[in-house]
Image 1 (tube, rainbow, N blue to C red):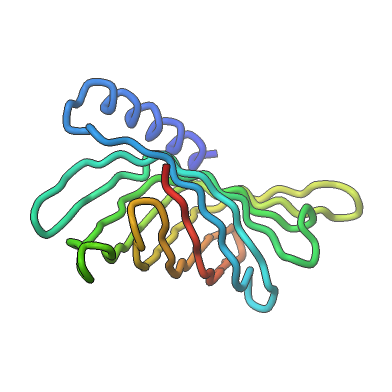
Image 2: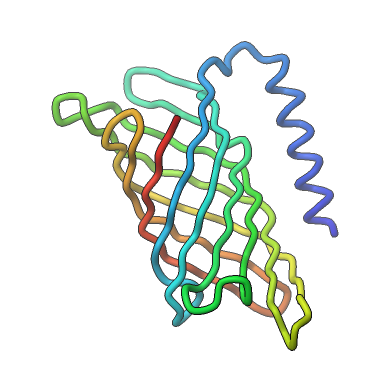
Length: 171
């Protein structure tokens, strides 16, 4: 319950600061699809959407804030039986462009709330967790990027870890 209260307070602060600050000039949405390992031994996927805003730029760095990143993760063999809903916020840093100004590297770190949903004997069992995502990759142009994402969730009594190849489209 403390995690939910913290997350709601962080989102309220996010929108209060964003409404009054002039530094947030470039906003965009990103959708992502992930494929890889879901947990210790299961193949899985993730689908997500994020609202991002540029908070800082200079010659050697562009910094974006993932104001809200929502993602649904599930195993391939039984989506709907063992799912995770992620609500996170964080930062994404981009390098200067290279390779004839077509590519740039990125790294991101998002933290927030994860709701684990497990179907047991027809009933849905829920478990809350602290979640952390770390990723690296290449932005191929202004719209497309490819990368690697490590997702970690700290549940009460258990940990979850997933490794994903990620494809994202920004609009």
